[in-house]
Length: 76
Image (cartoon, rainbow, N blue to C red; front, side, top):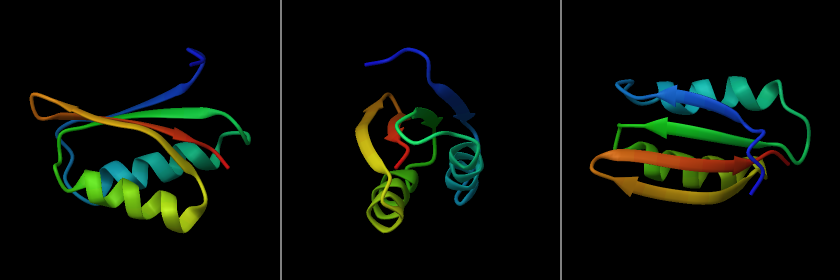
């Protein structure tokens, strides 16, 4: 997995802010680049799954560790 990816720290932000910050970052990215999002809002799990299905971006990774959710998105 490439390490040259953009990262968004959305810890402490409530829905819909983690997704909005991710969308803003994706708008600045080129196709094929990866975005890492770190969030603490449990609702973000569903939000990112639905967003990727609807937007055509890829949810490459989704994991949770001690209440911290990490997502890796691939820009379409």
